[in-house]
Length: 269
Image (tube, rainbow, N blue to C red):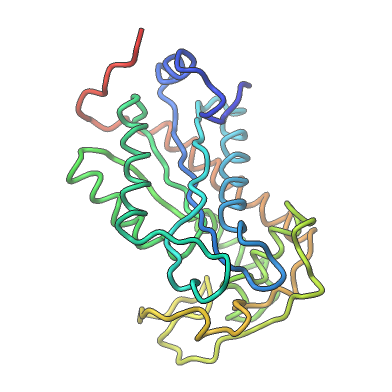
């Protein structure tokens, strides 16, 4: 198996890859605070980690896959009260990710997954798939990496509702499994939201009402959930389940009929 990293290929190698009708994966993260016990790079790191591992697994099963470098920042204005957060506004974020997708399409990729790693990006990416299709003729898919493994996550968790949200049981366990050198468990502390049931407080139990709020209003330390329940061993179990589920989708996407589309730009011969 060769590399699944698009950036490690030369243009003739990309031309040969396109002839195999590959799946293109665009990992999208964020650069924002994750409490005192986790680094700013959590979302970008975890999304890229799952994307590369899932792509490698799909490639082992005979699926051609190319993963772009991670889009390391996203839509995070709600975290600006905490030092270090870098955010794009909604228009710049959508334009950036959209133009990456358009570039892959122009190269000849007709099966594209935008794999999201930050909750604040999710609604914008759903809208982007429609804009790309109806305004530009592209058929692009988008999903957050955890969405592929929600049933497993529901059984895996040890926290009550409210324990999986941000810098929480899930993210802390995943970081402990993949970058233990960046996790400071001695600084981890649980923080549960106290809010009416109509507003979401957990990844697996969203409320019907959406509203904007600064994260500093919700948590003085930037944590919502139960990071103290995380362990490296539990994180390894979870990332394996997420990787397997995303890989399964990549294989399925490769088997779907390619969408009709305008002619791609010609690549140099």
